[in-house]
Length: 456
Image (cartoon, rainbow, N blue to C red):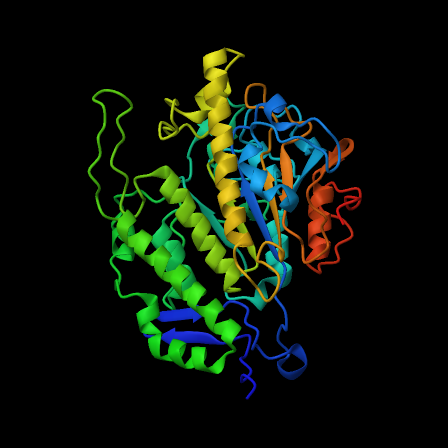
């Protein structure tokens, strides 16, 4: 007896819970339900801070024969799943001192104005938010923004007089409105799976009572709240669906367990006087690597369940100078060592910080690649752009930004290549290409001069 068809919009509901589903074989075809009969295309943007060591990023060799440089070696198992895109830039950031104006421009190509207070002007709407405006009504969350650092405040007089807040946001709903990113894993998780979604509390003081109240929730697993419906759904689907659902439910529970563990104080050994770490605020994991990977796993769940198709992750904010001593051999903050002035020891530390960020990107891509969507993977059905708004942290170079594109784009992107475009090709040409792959027929975006050639 054939499996009964399941609506693409099926949501498992319980008291205070709403659990969307991944793509399943038994979901009704579009002709019968006006819903998707195959997985959708997703777009994700991962921001890395403080540039790279150019000679450790840019490889030798052309096309499919490029060599993996030290910065790129964490991606060795994904060699055929990403491509380097060279000679792209944001022309309007040239000559703008420091990091701050380059962050909002990264996804918009806009001209960022010097402002006072909260009167911001980022020069444009970011590409992810244009996608959300055009397609966001198709999912529970139009877009999903995650990060690990609180919003910065004040004006950086040493950095050209730009508001530090610019360095905390890559997503902009319009030139004057940044989209707050969630930095608390539990609240990010609740936005996906709890019907009483927590608001984004970006940059809130960790001791603010509102944050404490938000975290004092029912600790019952969301899976327990929808248990009966989940059992009925397993019986309704195909054998392949049952395997896929079990994997999905296990992933949800795994994240819940890690969230619970991350909130419990852990005993730590800290060498007296050597980079002591203040106890993180409520809800923020003590370990930065654990924090970032939790956020990445939550983003994977958001994409897999089709709760959203558009996401951004800031692996750190501009000029991040948080303690990176969790990297063996590293002491201090990344921004400090990025200005190494070619001093070998400092430059080596900077190299380690950059490579660590690439390792986290590799983790995210492998998670996407591991998830089956009916003969293709979640990575096959995504376009994931990652990189930074400056080439070199030491000199703040704007030309030839470190940019890579991963994922199959639902069969529209040929990966595993080094693609060298003409010098000073607008980065916005990539965004126009991504928009069109999402079915958004814009004729231009930012300072684009056309789509990028040779992606397919």
